[in-house]
Length: 133
Length: 133
Image 1: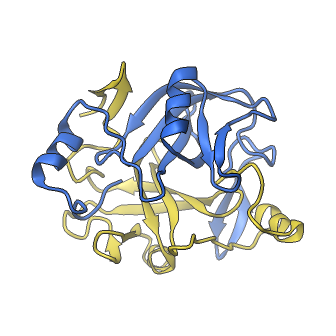
Image 2 (image 1 turned 180 degrees about the vertical axis):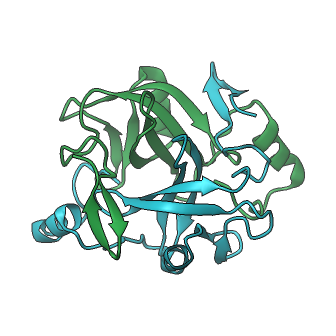
Image 3 (image 1 turned 30 degrees about the horizontal axis):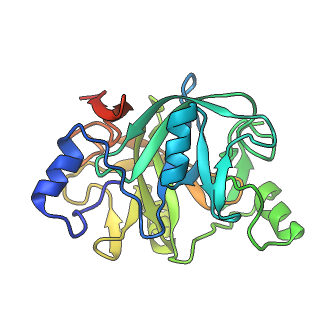
């Protein structure tokens, strides 16, 4: 994620991370980074979740989005129950390599509520308005 | 963010948060939630950052994206130095209200590296390939 200044890194490390071609995912103190799943066809943001190293490896190996469930403390294959998996077409990484965008093809509604995207409401005049079905 | 199961919430609270029209942003133990800035015109994900209550309030009051800088421990108006502010057209919230999507009009490159988006590289065959200028 973009920050005003790098966190306790020397300039050489920052240059390698920002300009280099090495994938050096930067997990936080809890071992997590943020992953944004975006519909590869429509550009819609479907969901935001966390990945640890295990989830990232499982995603890269299988081509299906895996996350780390903080509530269950374990690897979570998206769609493992619902069948609504996310096939990963591309993985983008940000400047300081602590956030990912997964370009995905969803097999069904991405949200457990049945909505196409978890972001089905907008903040308007202090309240929420449903914006997608 | 979607989770396999809600975290220590009763069913009534979950229903209110997921289906209600009350904006009840859910900050984590560090007082933060995840915010994804997405270009309102192109759908491109520009950056991912964190907001605390102060940043969210400043964003809503000014119509310009504000975040919480973890490195500086303070409110951070995006573009405060570069002038590359993000004008917020809409704020979307996810099912459990711990992540936001800001639909924005960027005044310039969103990334401090000068790239249009912080997500200017893709993971391919174990290395990074530049995908946008």
